Image 1 (tube, rainbow, N blue to C red):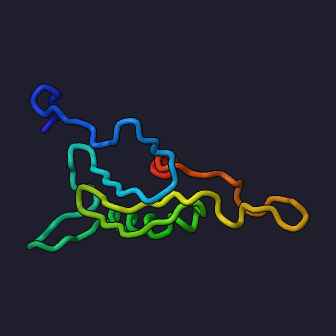
Image 2: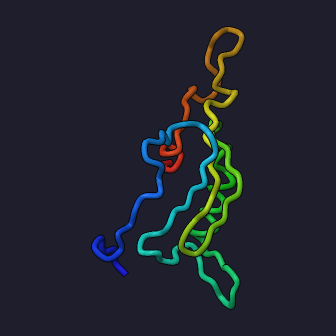
Length: 119
């Protein structure tokens, strides 16, 4: 079913005026285009992930390893959507300078929620 703005009248559930670049936990839902079952299927009431679903699960588990300024909590991958808690926390400890004042590790960049989702 294609989106028809006249019949669906979707409204944003985002808080008006809220700055989503603020640090803190966010519950995120991402739905596949046209709600297609890109990550697996449900067979006899049981979720069965395909390769894409397993890869999304792996990436959600490893997100904090590659982005020290981000933590994740619960993630669930369904055949046509993902739910997860993403927590932008700021620069990781490796971004702090050492005793000589030289930066170590990643650049001290704070990732906002949109930055995390983009990646």
